[in-house]
Image (tube, rainbow, N blue to C red; front, side):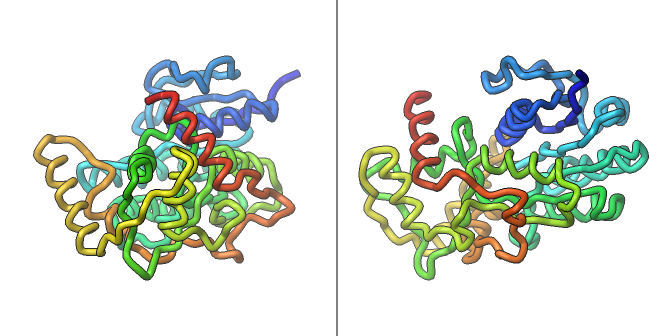
Length: 313
């Protein structure tokens, strides 16, 4: 029996590895675009067909898409040194892939975007994610493309998210000053299940926002309490951090990264994202419950994440 083929970009990244697992568990063959053979434990023993190349390689993209039953685009940059560096991957890479999908008549492209794309003026990352969405929409109508905007994704193996765990691991932790932001959250396993659900549905259309069952999100102190409890059995004492302090910290982090020639995930743009007061999910834009529902609540998911972090530390 021939397995259906899911063509996946970004499959060696944090969310992409969960997507690969979700599709493999559902009986799919995974055709994975990668610049090198993946060695991550999460990808071991999965039915992988490797296509060597990147988003800048039309030959590799054509090979990836040819004959696939669905394409999932999860590749992207979460940190970069410049606007151009963000756009060349998050916009131009998405556009290049969508153009090949359009020519190949592959049934559907699932674009893994970000809730940050809802507010493109906040950061270069948010701008580039919205630009990627717009580029795909220009090439594929909503019957050929579904866009998913996950809220803050977390889970085991999320190395970029370790900063939040470290913040909550001590006796004291900085907390955004009132009014607190509302931050929706989603475990990577649930986000991957959502990708599988819309990829295999004939009725999924347009753009959906993803979170756990708490569409209204969590306050900053509540997040600290959940993480602190998972890590050390009690919540840290929240110390109010004025917006100006957060913005200054972002500027300093970005400046230090620039001097070293590195890219930092926390900079001025990320500080503006953190200070944005509404990262809740619009119920009208959630995936219909008949197609998908989140299964992992924040305390259980964070306990799993904390256990991974403590074992890896």
